[in-house]
Length: 310
Image 1 (tube, rainbow, N blue to C red):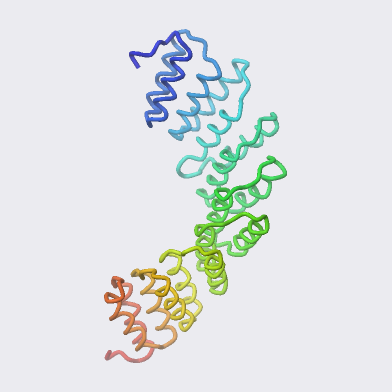
Image 2: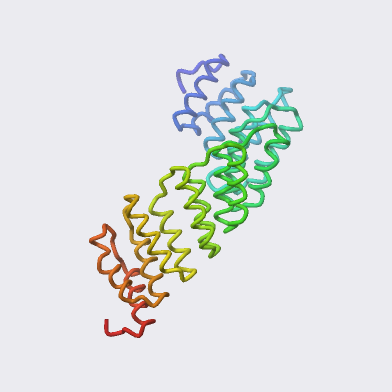
């Protein structure tokens, strides 16, 4: 800070930007305040650097104050300023998602060109705040209201929001509409669908989503397979769960403790205590680790089959 020429706008702008990029955004904001108190006229470049710094620190109050300062100086807010405002409101928790959406609508009203980055940030804020309905509504309005085509990041944020809200119908419709637009999905898209179906106890939907991922040559993780097996376990579909586990091994997906526990529990609900015990005892040999959940599932399987002596 000592080497910055406080009477030179370009020098101050470069310094604030460099501090922001190096994650020293708080120092950058201090420098901006020091420049202002020194009497140097703040221009749009310098204010944008300050906005970016405050956004990286998720200080939405400071960011909005700086945006007000832009207007008070008779300067026009551009795409950079609105993106910083939306990003700051998103933060780590997305609590200020409503402010983020409001800023985008203000930008549209002022004729500021839309930014897919700002759109993605706002959708992500809705996802973090578990506002699945807002995320889907905003995604649907992106094309005709903001003249932007949603990309994979936008779709995945909305899909994740639906997954957190266990809205399996909405997420499947969302993904299939995306495919009809000739947009490719990735494994995160289908994994979110599998999880949503598992949370809603819709095992058919989980298998459909997993099958769709495979048809797109996408390799699902063991976590995704565990969610699908868990949905089958909840639906008392132990045979389908075993078939899925066999397919998992063919794909060289190493089973984890949650996948093994879900399989043991599924067999228990199907009163296949011997298969449940085999899965439990062979867990370590199959590359998985068993824990108390797996043990409890095995005990429950024997109990349901009246094989307490096992």
